[in-house]
Length: 190
Image 1 (cartoon, rainbow, N blue to C red):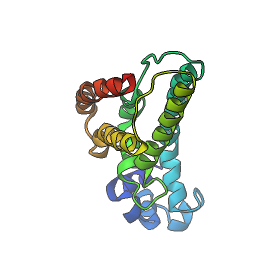
Image 2 (cartoon, rainbow, N blue to C red; image 1 turned 90 degrees about the horizontal axis):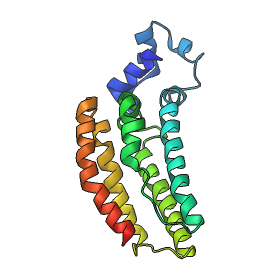
Image 3 (cartoon, one colour; image 1 turned 90 degrees about the vertical axis):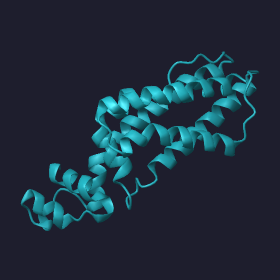
Image 4 (cartoon, rainbow, N blue to C red; image 1 turned 30 degrees about the vertical axis):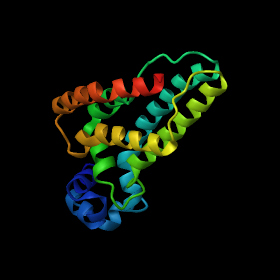
């Protein structure tokens, strides 16, 4: 797996080859196929746990915010994607760099867009539940929400894409937190 990770990190999914991976670990290409079906399967083995950890956090996050809306409760700010980056993504920066920046040509190529879409759908469901429960909800069109979420998620993952050292990523995160969280709070409380 180390040889495959090196190949994908150096060349990206699209330009990596099974032959190149085999050479790195002293096997034939046929030998590699004993461990995986194909290049996509091998790449998935390397990034699927990172994807799962991130998606599990996001699912728990939606649940934490969805429950008060369903019961008619008032929104209490608990956590944000800033916390996800700090607690889940940045400690394993290399794995997420592979998933986000080296996945072109794989099924993960649109991972950030897909994450944005799932987040948007979750927020729309939350806002609908909040409205049905008699809560106050912002008047924002889905296209505007998509635009804001795209900017937010893209900014959060910039240190991952550019493979920042951990300390620099955390410094950037503090700036992003200062910039984005007041705006989200103002929007959601309006």
